[in-house]
Each structure stands twice: as C-alpha cells, then as structure tokens.
Image (cartoon, rainbow, N blue to C red; front, side, top):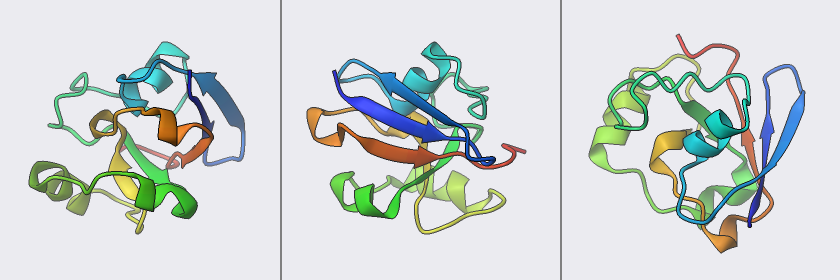
Length: 106
C-alpha cells in the first residue's frame, strides 16, 4: 500500500497507508485527517477537498480536467500545486507523496 503524508496548515503531519485506486480525499477521510471536508463526497462539485500537492510530486500526476480546473480557479489560497483531492487516484508511483492542506476549505 502506498504511503501518503498529509500536512495540516499548522505543520501537523498525518502519514497514512491507503489502497491503490482510492482517491486522496478518501484516504484523508478514512484516516480522519483534519482539513478535508469533502462535502460532495468526491463528485468534483464543491471544492472542499482542496489540497496543495508538494512541488516534487506535481509531475507524477495526470493533468487536472476542465471541471476540476474550474472549481480550483474559484477557491481561496490557490497555488501552483492546488488540486482537488477527490480527483487524484492513488497509484503505486505515488508512494511517499506529500500533500499539504489549506487553513480553511471555505
């Protein structure tokens, strides 16, 4: 199982092991990681699973689709690594990935 490191805005780290094929959002929710609200349950319609992919890992992910890009464009505190965690599937290649969380999802 790949290991993902979630880092809250205050620096607190949560290291979780998750099955391949599940989303980053599912991994965060399943492991009670604070900072991922996931109001829409992963249907890419709310933006409350916003996260910042660590710069070293951005190139390992597929490009965001237009629906995700539209939602991200309307969020606060957007960075180059801003993605919706519901749209990123965990693969073996993502083992060790670092994901930072915003101070607020609203």
